[in-house]
Length: 147
Image (cartoon, rainbow, N blue to C red):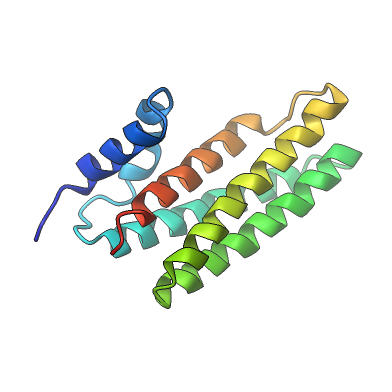
């Protein structure tokens, strides 16, 4: 049974968060282009998320030292570990573990955001982290279609 993953992801995202759907959909759909299986599409989305999160880590490591940056570096490392865990759970078809790890990635980025908000400083990599959060949300939406 063939279906349009672009339509499926967009519909799922609209159900999850109508306001953010338009911007978030554009992030992941290009990486799932051509995939007709939700498991493969989810794997492609998670792999792209890993690449984006690695990019966030590279930016964060170049920014020097501060208390909030130290928190973010730790959270970004945790996010990478959670993404790798999500890929393992996907391969073993453990959807609960997959969802837990993808949700943890979102929490990791929110914790980083919070570290800056608590000090009243603007995060120097807020834009790139926002993209990673959108990609994690899209990965969760795609994972919800695996049966």
